[in-house]
Amino acid sequence: MVSSRAATLTALRARIASLGGATATPRARPASLDLSGRAAELGFEVETGAAGTTFVRRSTVDLSPFFEAAGLAGAPPVADLLALFDHPCEPDPPVWLNGEGVGVLDIESLGLRGSGVMAFLVAMGIQRGAVLECEQLLLADPGEEGALLGAVAQSIAAHRLWLTYNGRSFDIPVLAARCTLNRLDASCVQPRLHGDILAPVRRLFRDRLGACTLRHAEMSLLNHHRVDDVPGIEAPGRYRAWLHGAGPAVLSGVIEHNLQDIVSTVAVAARLAAHVGGERVRPAHAADAYHLARHYERQGVADAAEVELRASVAAGIDPWARRAGHRLAVALQRRGAMDEALETWRRLHLEDPHDLRAARGCAIRLERRGDIGAALQVCERVRRARADWEPWWERVRGGGAAGDDEWRRREARLRRRFHP
Image 1: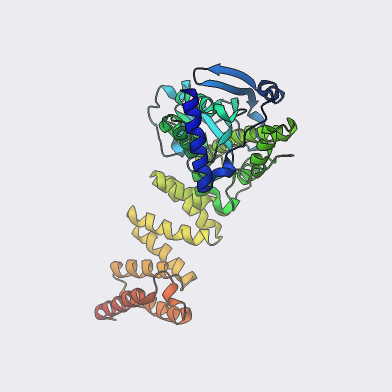
Image 2: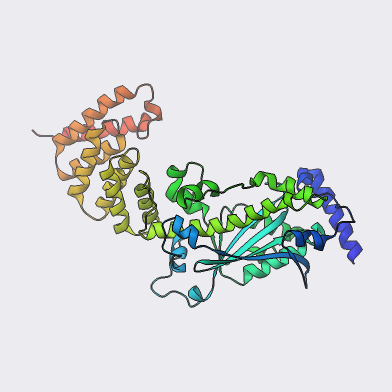
C-alpha cells in the first residue's frame, strides 16, 4: 500500500511538472541528511502523531510593545474584531467569545501560483489578550506533507475565529489545494469564522497606504519597522538550499519573517478595531474620515457615518471632501432633512459647476421645492460647463448622449412650469 501511494504521488508530481508546476516542488534531498538534528538547529522539535511526523517550534510573544507603538492601551474585545468583519454579536455575545483565543495563520510557500505550490512553513498563533502563543510547523521532509496538513487542520478546528492577511485569496486556498493532492478533505483547513485583514485595511486606509501590503500596514498603522528582515520572495530559494544541506542560517531569517507576519497581523487587526471604535490612527490622514464613513455605511450605522462625512466635508481637502459632500447630501435626503440636503447640493454645485452629480442633485431639490427659476439657472450653468468639457463630454460621469437628453428634458419641463 505504501509503495502504491508513493507511485501515485510520483506520477502526480510528474503531471504537475508537465503543467508548469515543477518549480514549486522540491527536488529529492540527499539521503544522508539528519532531519531531526537539522530541524533542532532551528528550534524545531519532532512530534509523531497519527498522521505522521511533524517538526514544531513553539514560542510566546508579548504583544504589548506592538500595541503601545500603535497607540493602543491593549487588545480590543473579540466582539470588536467580529464586527470589523461584518459579524456583529451584540447585544448578547456568544459564550465562546471570551473563552477562546483568536487564531492567526500565515504560510511561506514555494511560489505564488500553480498546482505545485506547497506550504513549507506554517505559523499559527492563538491570541489571548496581549499574549500570542505561537506554533510554527516546518516541512523538513516533503514526504510528510500530509502530517503537516493534518496538524494545521487540527489547530484550525480547535478555534472558531482565525485572522489572516490575504489568506482568503492565498493561504487558505493553498492549504486546501495541498489537502486535495494529499487525499485529505479540503474543508478541514477552512476556518469557521475567517477574518481576512486585507479587506478592511483596503477599505479604511488604501489612500493612506497606497500599496496595502502587510509591511506598509505595520509601518504606517503600527509604527513598526522590521530590521534585517528576509524578503518573502527569497523564502523558496532559501528553503530549497536548506533542503539540500545549507546551514541553519539560510532558513532562520525566513522563520523569523514568518513569525513576525502573524504578530503583525494580530496587531494590525487590533489597530483596525480600535480605529473603528474611536481610537483613531495618528497622525490623521485626509482620507481617514471619508473611508471610515463608508465603513459605517456598510455596517448600517447611519449616525456614525454622518458624523464622519461632516468631518471630512469640514476638513475641505479634496477629493475626499467633495465625495463626502455627495454622500452627506444623499444621507440627509434619506432621513428627510431636505433643506439641509439642498444647501449641501447647492454649495457643491456653486463651488464647482463642472460637478454634474452636484448639479443634478441641486436641480432636483430646487424643482421639488418649487424654486423653478433657480433650477433653470442650474441648467444654464450646466450648459456652459458642457461647452468647457468638449471634447471629453462623452467620458464625463453624467455626460454623453444620455446626459444631454436628461438635461434637455429637464430644462424644457422647467421652462413650461416657469412663470416669473
